[in-house]
Image 1 (spheres, helix red, strand yellow):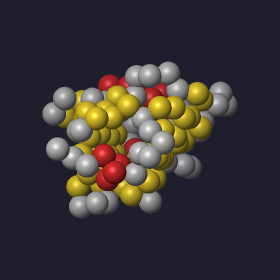
Image 2: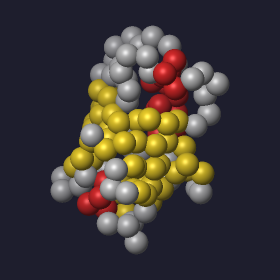
Image 3: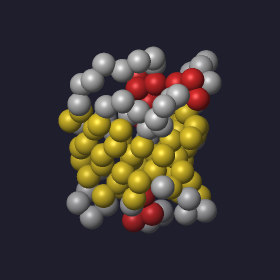
Length: 117
């Protein structure tokens, strides 16, 4: 059983599954980040354009981002934000490898990968 405290901290996206656009094309100026506050059971971050925050819904290696989150509403160029959010909503599990890489999963498929900041 993974220790939820390994989620704590800020992580920067460096891989996302699905889009036909190159990663650097989706996020040319700023990569999405996500920060977990495991003590307060909160999550916040930036989609590469808008800020978001909400409750951390995680138990064991299961995690969900389907609960409503507060989000700023700036107009965002390209499809980066939409791709990030649509993929995040499908996430069902997680694991951290080497204390530096957060892998978010949909079932047993890795959909997003983040590097510890």
